[in-house]
Length: 114
Ligand code: AMP
Ligand code: ZN
Image (cartoon, rainbow, N blue to C red; front, side, top):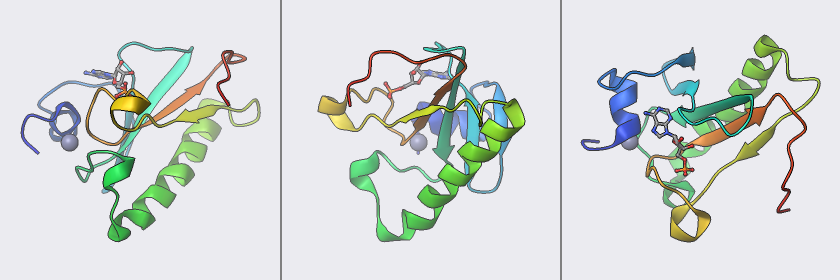
């Protein structure tokens, strides 16, 4: 989608520090890390938010969790654990309107809301 920052990252029009890529999924480092490890994992298909999921998106959402575990294994934080956050829409605090999973790790994370 034009004018979508993460679509531009997928197309290589905006630079990113890539961590993982396949046909359907891209993972790259967050530009403003909120933890020692802060990776964004996104579907390459432009999906605006969790609230815009369609039935055909179910498989890729499942695969994103497998990929996050793979990244955790490769980067050595699978055993210590990690946190996954998805902000959805205005009340959820979503700023970039292309579905993304925040993968946070590398320290004991504080500020639990739930
Ligand atoms: P959210 O508030 O859930 O929409 O998260 C958007 C995230 O995208 C924030 O954590 C930003 O730091 C991150 N971000 C914004 N621009 C870029 C960029 N060019 N490269 C990597 N991460 C970015
Ligand atoms: Zn997009």
